[in-house]
Length: 171
Image (cartoon, rainbow, N blue to C red; front, side, top):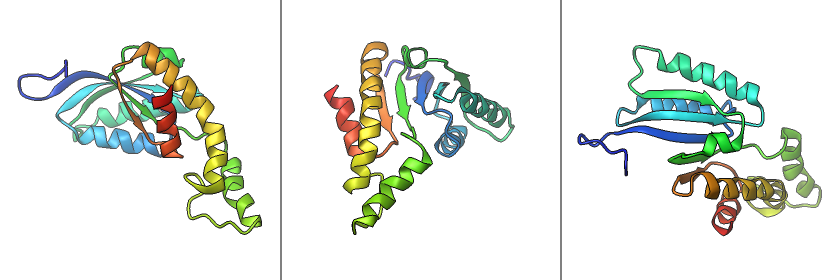
């Protein structure tokens, strides 16, 4: 890796976080980075809800200003997918494809037909419905990654996991 220092640390990495306005995954990710001393750099937060990404930047800035934080990360908000991805070393994708109401439909519509799912966003009819909302977005992400950061490592946290990853590979 081009950023590896003599002491084995990696400095100046760039992580593009698609879905960087997340209140759950982004906060966990920031907390993990706060504990990590071997890697450092910049996290570019991109979300279709830019206000949520701005709020997460403020949270990240406050977290990394604390004396007990060991990590060294800066947070930026990107206004576009291209801006977030340009030259990124890693891409983290953690999006909610659709609304919570649509997720409820993914689970409860199949129940009306006697199909009970333990998880309605991964497999079965619920997973298929979610895939139909998600795959078009993943086509766009894959094309942008290929253009702006073709050598980046991509980490996917969005379900249905296998169909999302398969779309990234195919595109």
